[in-house]
Length: 367
Image (tube, rainbow, N blue to C red; front, side, top):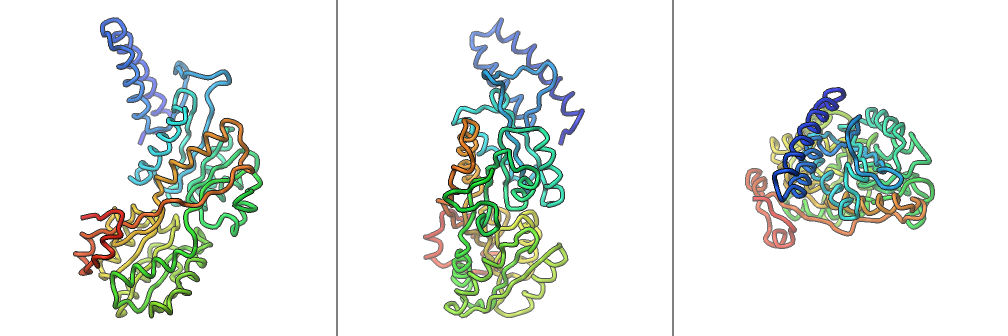
């Protein structure tokens, strides 16, 4: 990863090289306009989507100059799912007329699962005086709201923003934040149903979340508890705060007959999904996860909204704010698309037979 001065030098070198090549193309190639456009796209891609201006860099501007958007990501930059989210967000903006490096500058910051780092990065983004901020996940929304109560914030993948005090109501958010929720807490019962369906012998399910990064985790727990009796399953909470807790909880669960795990949406568990999936595989336990990228990483079943799809919707609200809309007047929207993904390869390794009815309902099967 290129940083600081090295990024400026690397960018300057690329800019000089492209300028020279563009002059050559303009003189010798009838398709110069197309080639120059493609080279410019390559130039932006090399910088990883974070557009930074330095002396000599030419940015096509509108009458008021390019707008600036700060994006605070809860996970790490090298996470494949994060790159998918970013690409979807930028494509969404492009469809609405905003091209990175031309009429909008996008500043990405990556908290990599650290709430403390997220708070520092939120202050850093606010200091840039962006026209809008994007906050991915509850901890990042909390960090941006601490840093500013005036700059418009569009959040995504946040559970129960009303209950957590981020907005007044879904219809009329009030304040400087609006965006997109990730789940209805009633989904806890659906996750329990999926576990019971793939493993009828399940008698116990633990609901894993970090109380600090997912204070709303108890809502999912209560939802699963409410459905427990109808499935003949004992449901308990599994609060976890570090990697050692993950190992301890799953190891203990693996020592019981009929154990299973429900992982709720949480920055803490998201950045540790490989570790969770590894320990689940060691003990051959059935588990259900909240996001499709858990199944893509080797998880057994995932059911929930696709974060990349949500990022595409986020671009719409950023566009409206850049054109003058106020967050207080934009209703908070709920997910309109849920995906059921079954990792058939993992099921075979763990020894679970996926019922035909479950296979038929799956939006995607990983083989």
